[in-house]
Image (cartoon, rainbow, N blue to C red):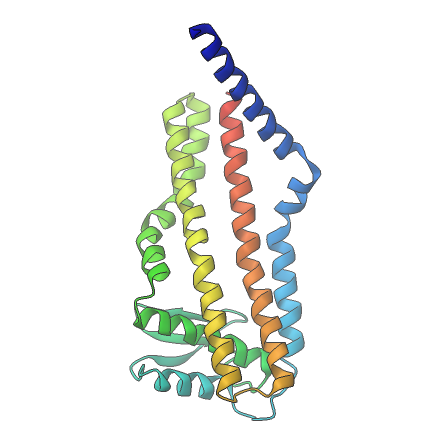
Length: 243
């Protein structure tokens, strides 16, 4: 019985390793690796398209962001200009909604969608949205892990120290967890943005579709990055199995 037990578990380990090898050697694995690049191209193309379509209201993204913040009692959150393109973000430490040069003063569908999305993050912060608190808790380890994991992994391989390799994989895993926690934040911020833009009349009906397309493309970049990171984690685990 004992021999049968070990034999079954040994075969299960072989089958699992075989599954990983087949997974990592398949063609779609290569396709998945280029997903982040494809997602970036899609968001750039989508934003470029809808950032040429001016809204009937004619209001700038910055002014609408300011009004949305005030409507939610966030008078202390400042709307600022940030250099670059698609560099828009909300900074919870400085409590600022930073809008890029291609968004701040523009009255286009794409610009207003992006600005409303960042306001959504400010609202999440003010309401202590649970996924944001989880991501904030993970961030320190994810930040450290993103810088150190590759060096520890290489050192562990060179010195043949498996414990060091496992530490590297654990650090990399925190980055994957951070991306996983980020995804619901981004989807929720887009949902809040679309609800406000459509219900408060900032966009007319034919403009809502463009805003949704812009935010959907943006969400795809986070999904693609998460998929690529999960595959990389599987690849690291498979490499460790082969040692």
